[in-house]
Amino acid sequence: MHPVIVHIPSDILAWLNINAHCQPGDLVNSLLKAGHSPVNSQAWVKLFFEKSNLVINNSATLPFEQIKTAGTQAILKNEYEEKYLDSKSRFGASFPNYLTSKRGKRYPIGMVCDSPRVLHVMDVLSSKECDAIVEAARPSLTPSTVVSNNVANATVSTDVRSSYGTYFPRGANPVVKVVEERIADLFGFATTHAEPIQILNYAPNAEYKPHHDYFDENTAEGKRLVAKSGNRVSTLIMYLNEVELGGATIFPELNLQVLPRKGSLLYFDYYLPDGLGGGSYDASSLHGGQPVLAGEKWIATQWVRHLPYLG
Image 1 (cartoon, helix red, strand yellow):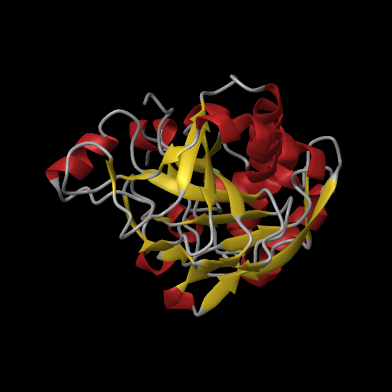
Image 2 (cartoon, one colour):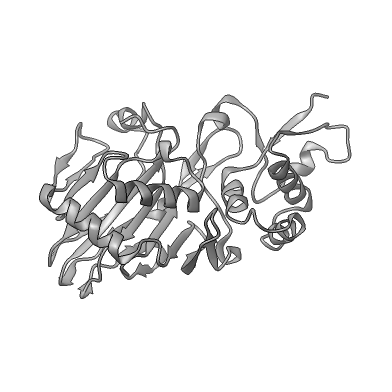
């Protein structure tokens, strides 16, 4: 029998990176409590600390059929999984109460949803960082556009999205650059996979009606949008000011709304890997921005792609 080379699924890898300061035995126990098999839990932690591929022969005591268990599957090494980013996770309530950076700073998690994974993380940006980003973006705001799966090129559609926005190319703004690196560290993705951060301003009555962030690959325009960098797999929304009234982010399929809090970050992912180099997208990630009823709302949004982002 040929050996099976087991890779750590990237959602597990992101969690291990966040908790790399813990003892291996504690990490294994946490994975077991989250519902993963003993074989997977031990193999992933061992591989993580070895920093190399773990080769297991089918004829040994850890056969492939044991490793490929229900829940999170072991990912076979192939060209697709080497190149593509998979960020789907099912930790749910088992996720730590804090996200911890590589430098040891802890960020409290205010809310967790299991499926799709939704995390509202507090105090990711300082008040000064939020203010600096808003002031840097203000002079270049233009009416926001909407990317359609059916129409070539982004278009302005006030019926769907009535905000104003701009974006910062990667590395163009020093404050944004620091924030980009911080959130990539916290959520375990490479900055090269992220689209440029987009800044959005919602005036009173402005809203963004419910929509999906991933593209429909069954349409010609959807295929074009994913041709260079793959599809989107996750979204990060950073709240840059205190909204007087309204402006919540809603998930209609989940009966969930997230109130904007200055400096906090809302993360959700929607790619469902099948363990065989492919996957699907979670339609329950449908979300929108409720109308602002008083004051204004400022957010920074970033989307993460399967492949390094090439525009």
